Image (cartoon, rainbow, N blue to C red; front, side, top):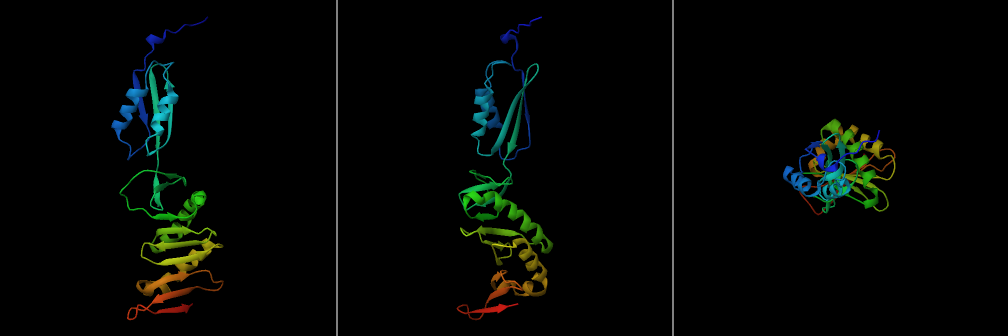
Length: 216
């Protein structure tokens, strides 16, 4: 038997919003649904509504689906920021750059844009190692030659190079309490690129124009 549905008798009576979000205003959601969720269960234009939601800077993805007999379910995925991108945008936890504003104190990524996903992975990797000494990255840099460098939240610049980055960070942490912690207020940078050790460039407090290079 063929069933003929009369469109006019199948309005959307309820819109369900799912997902966790902090930076998206409920008023923004309401404005979009009022303007773009028009028509009835069958002819509502989900493509246009989805496109409108995607224009919101904090929306990473959006899913709209009909739920019989009279509901529209909207599932929102918000960007989860982990860093700033060279002062012109933000980086989410998927390693994607998006343009939005926040007053959160976030670390900074500096590097080639096409390597942002690799930088996000390395950022998590290095921070996990640094956490042993309760320190973390404030700036992570990847040069055009793909050489890594970080600056910690206690102002220590660490040069890591291209290879064996994780093992070099582990070596840095292993020596942190024994050698570096006492010098941290005087350190210009730590170079971890040596095969059998590392070098510390220390700035003398009494004479700021001279530096002392020591290899450990």
